[in-house]
Length: 181
Image 1 (cartoon, rainbow, N blue to C red):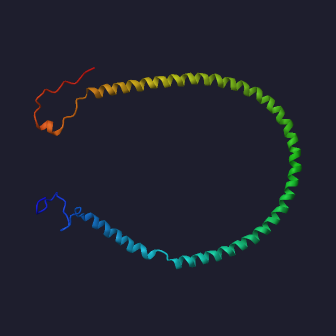
Image 2: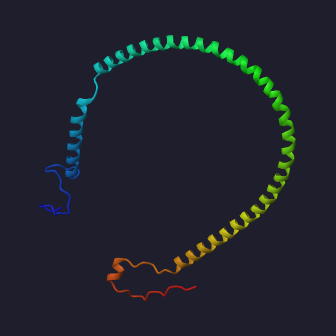
Image 3: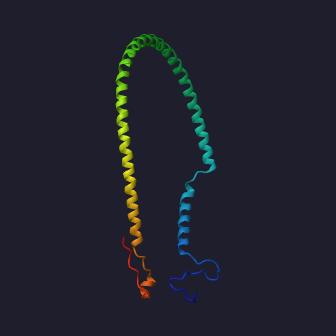
């Protein structure tokens, strides 16, 4: 290193034997210190947190007690109404279920025959579609193989790139001609 640093040489702090001086590090440190000076006064103290905790606890206890009382009264009313509604619903449901049961048995027998025919038709269509999917897959694999083979052959025929030193100095041997297919 010369006595006067050149523009591209790193500068070191006078008298140190350590790493070179980095001006960007000072700039980053000043930015971080400024951020800390702005943020630290806005943070809560232990005393602030204790006051907040006590206030929240008091509010929660009062809210829980009110909620407990209201819930108990609502549950009693709901229990009475629900029991009456369930009994009425039970009677109506039993009668409706019996009627629907007879209707459904007849409808199920009718639909079973129709669905069996449709299922057989779908099986035939799926078999045909499977054949087409397999054929499409095989043709796609052949196309991908052909494309890959063509690209590999094209890469093999490209002459190697010349480096900067090879360009400035004339070559003593002739450049080989590219291979053709």
